[in-house]
Image: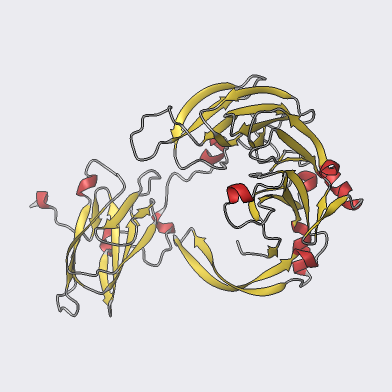
Length: 446
């Protein structure tokens, strides 16, 4: 993707966003906090107001303005990367500017909607009519109406403006509130059957409620401090509606403390009936955030099970061991290497000099989908490669000292995985050691 445009907006902290759908398709909604515009001790100074904002952006209008030549070019250096599945490599184009639209110059581009302070994400229900956002320390869940939002804009039902941006009156956009749902409503997912599921961070639970009546139907505890949650297809117009996955941030007594950090926790919950049922409790890592979940059959039917070497168009590919070689051009050395269970070819390379730029192009000769190989050089400052079947990947190495440097497969591939290794011999800079390499010797055949 390219950056089509950027918006200059008031200086708040902007958080998670959700696109509209159906009637709200042309809009995207962001939550923002720190409308106090504090710059120190934010846990206190960014929580002074009772309400922060949802920012509603008419992205379709922004696109039309850009198409009309509106906005201004602003210097901005960034890379536009495009990956090619046939060559297994990316091309990078450096872009030097971006189109900026200052929202104060284009009335109707964005509006602010008050919501309880310190929200962390806004969620749009499958039909695209209602959207939900609530403060992390709030005791209600407000449900807003897109239709009412348009009506309030049309009738100019503003409570004022913030830095020139109209602020809609809370009650003119509000469809209703879920009363006493628990403490700390964070995120809401939908099952496509008229029900919503909200994570309650402080009271550590998921609350199920009916979208049109805001009636609480059920609640189930989580362990502990749930943040995000995921209903398969829950962000789409047609959720699958069988399960919700709780993505919990704290697990103080769930798992053994076997490392410097405790794992986080995820829980699989059945939501097919009125009462939610816990099916599985399992560890996860990385303070789980937003996740997308879809049925396995959606992926399985599109999975490639056999990768054809003849379709590898990488210019550095070696499609058989006969093509494995080492080529010097000045102080650049290209190693065309192959990987197959359970050896790398070539596996002993001499004549590399300190200060050379060495490019190791590794082609995985396997074609079965579940046999990747890895590649690393001991002492290299670059991370290892993961080379999928039929693929070619390149590692650049600049040896900064002389010596013997092992290289090896880093992804388990067979019983003789540990034997899948070789060596570089690096000579002093300016050395006349000839460039030689070996494709291995079959000792058993002697």
